[in-house]
Amino acid sequence: MIFADHARAPDVYFGFKTDDGVDAFGLTGRTFYDNARRPGLGVHGGLHPNELAAVGIVAGSAFRGDGLSSTTPSGICDLAPTILTLFGLPIPSTMTGRVLLEALQAGASAVPPPDIMPEAHEVGLNSYRQTLRRVRVGRAMYLEGGTATHGESVVTRAMEAAE
Image 1 (cartoon, one colour):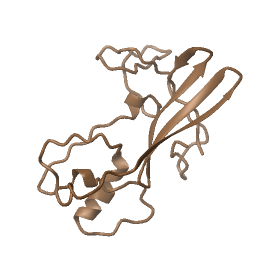
Image 2 (cartoon, one colour):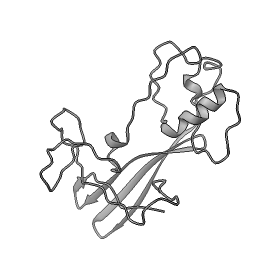
Image 3 (tube, helix red, strand yellow):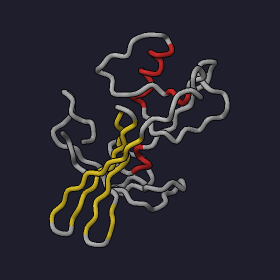
Image 4 (cartoon, helix red, strand yellow):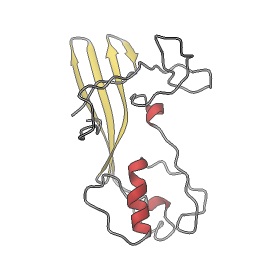
């Protein structure tokens, strides 16, 4: 469910609990540590939407120069297919990303917007629930975040999930 089913993946994952509070840097999604580390340090592997977010900046004659800020979900897995396309090379079927057509100069206006389909997967027991949110763009799938709820309180945290 979180795209961690490969040969080097561990059997069990652990992520620090995060919440929607504001850290010392003014960023939402602070992490709590049960040690001497100062609050606000980033960790990799959590499911808070801000921890999963990344910024990609491209420039050059192959890309639109109109100050595009795309809201279409994308990820690091899209860089290789996009570069291969720019070089006119085939994209291997094993690649999970997509070509960032919305950012390319050639044909950007002629390309219809991709189908974006959000999905949520929920499991739970009694009043405890875990929800994993993903979004599909064409054939590419992106992880949006995970939440855990117990009763009426919502705690955003990394869920231990491996497929």
